[in-house]
Amino acid sequence: MKIVAIVGSPRLNGNTSYLVDQALETAKSLGVETEKIHLAQHQVNPCLGHENCASFATCKQNDDAPWILDKFINSDGVILASPIYYYNMSAQMKAFVDRNYFFYTHGVNLKAMCAGLIVIGGGGGIDHAIKSLKLFLDLDSTIPKGNIMTVTGYASKPGEVKKNNTLVKEAQRLGEQMASILLN
Image (cartoon, rainbow, N blue to C red; front, top):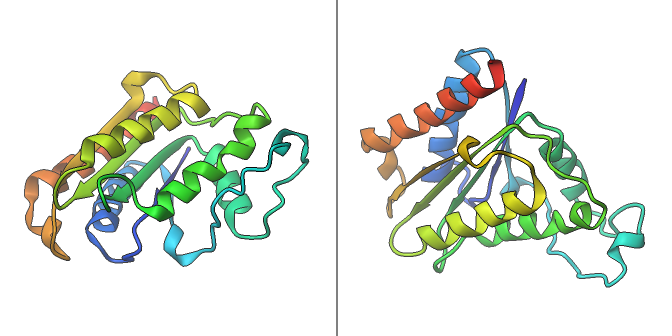
């Protein structure tokens, strides 16, 4: 069993990434294989909106999205994590979500049995991002609603979540819940 985490933060060691690490470390300690993909370390171009996307055998863009998407759609559990920038998910996460359109037009769904959403913001927009990410999962997966867990909270300064024991424990609990679903 494997959990793949997609992190949409441009900060490799930011608050969002730290909470993802907490979830993955917990899941790994319980026997689940984990992988973290930081979108900022890869080239994931925005969707070009080809009208005949469904007629293509492969996406026409030459970037890192195909191998990232392959890992994502074939994982047993997924985590989508994003900071809030201007009242919604980051541009990196939005580009990733939009690039899943290729699979949508080809009738390919996520194989995941569970999902975790981690969204951290310094102000408003957390609810918008969670709603958008849940809608994405509803369109592209058959994950039962009860198997989609969320961790949300506020942090505006680098490293701030490390001092928030409640958020850290929620992220660890998310990893524990996902491992429980995958291992039972």
